[in-house]
Picture 1 (spheres, rainbow, N blue to C red):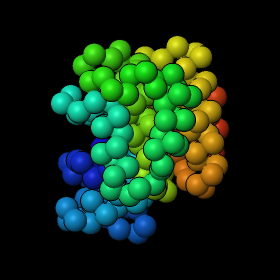
Picture 2: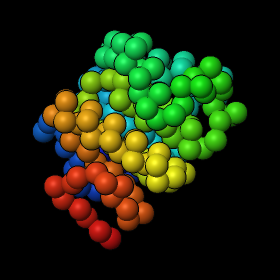
Picture 3: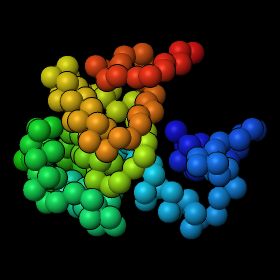
Picture 4: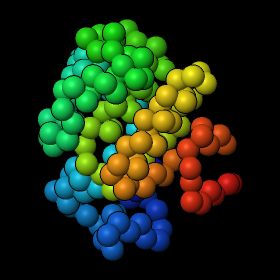
Length: 164
């Protein structure tokens, strides 16, 4: 995921997005690509501890105005984290943090949603809710999904699965 997102350049070969070599992009080009083409949920989530859960979500949405406040609240309610929006990430369980990170990723336009072990700390009910939300968002935008998982597909549909 770090290679696709342009965070690592220590590889051989090519990583191409829209026929552009990601490893050769300048910072401004990477920022533009990340703002409109790639949304990501990192395995380590990368929530800002000094911001509330809602502020973590809004930091992404403020750049693009992709979702309305009502849409964000609906996603939070659907993922059972609406009551945590005013809390800081350090006070939330890892599963709650994962759901906040997912909402944040969905609050921007993207061609591909990158998910790096996004459900590792969720129970089956919350996985179904998150998977359903992701599926609906992908269908409504026509975007693709690239996910790294320890083997479970979590009810999501994939055109291709690579197993190592």
